[in-house]
Amino acid sequence: MDGPGGIDLSAAIAAPGQSPGAISIDIKSVKKRYPATANSAGIVALDDVSLTVKSGEVVVIIGPSGSGKSTLLRTINALEKIDSGTIVVNGDVVTNKATDLPAFRSKVGMVFQHFNLFLHKTAMENVILPQVAVKRRSRAEAEANAGKFLAKVGMLERANNYPSQLSGGQQQRVAIARALAMNPQVMLFDEATSALDPETVGGVLDLMRELAGEGMTMVVVTHEMHFAREVADRVVFMDAGAIVEMGTPEQVFRNAQSERTRKFLSLVG
Image (cartoon, rainbow, N blue to C red):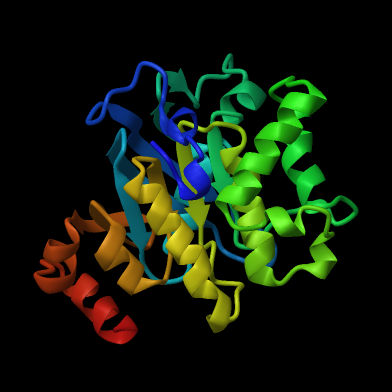
């Protein structure tokens, strides 16, 4: 499967042992509570959440701020510990204490709201370093791979620029290239466009559309309703730490069954 410039992307999107339609992510009865502090009451972040994502599927999670969307996404990558329940990603039991989390995370790409690039490293070095440190690739292999994916996201000409010399949209493209260069089985996007100015949002969304079209398994938390309508295989609406409604974009946006879903959609357009 070729991307722009004839780059073969099949290695980046093929999960070993996974065929299209097989369950890639299996979340069962997950609960997460932040305990009370001197300044705040306890918060139920996730309230008995269950969700499956098939290989090659794009699931978009929407909902108001504080609804648990980002928390759920971060539990998939074990960046947030859960109180109970199980999470399995392509056979790796994320919630098992014996799971090698660094090795597991190398197979799950995550793109954050705030880029998380090394400010003292060039774009090229930002893409090379995780490959060498985690994947144990040679410098030459990592550099060649970095070049391919920087080209993929339209950033090869800026390979020697530092983050301070790049716009927000360009930094986010480098962050996506960094994640793809690890050859992930799954990509997680946590409000990847919310910190961008309106002029650069479209380019990043176009790149995400392209990845979806190539068959990448994706879970996306976003406030971009047009993107959800256009790209998602399924839309999940969350509120107060729970999944209120899920279905195809047609079902959720045109025929929502929950009054809470309808109210939210009426406000966001």
